[in-house]
Length: 135
Image (tube, rainbow, N blue to C red; front, top):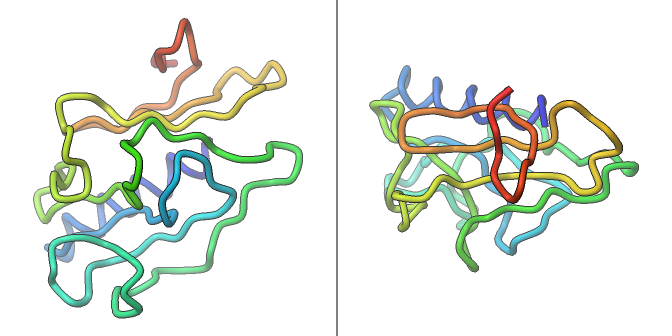
């Protein structure tokens, strides 16, 4: 979760610094085992798998003992990205009134087992009754 948090922050700062849509792409579905940091190279307003968007760095693979990361993003959403102001890109997150939560289960007693992305912030936390509570 700390790696995902760091990568989301990096995507956000890349978006803000370069004034381009940037973020984390996992390819859809509510559960995933790898993701990439990407920038919108074709200026279509989203990061996607068109083969044109720029991948920043290597593909990150979730460790085997964790299994997969679960996302609360709507079905079919492939990424979380940020605009040139560093705000959540609403083209990739159509329901921007509800934060997107990434979590692992079971957490094996970890003190941090979730990351929440809202319009203006990204937080690390611990799942508590279905909510990512900030640590």
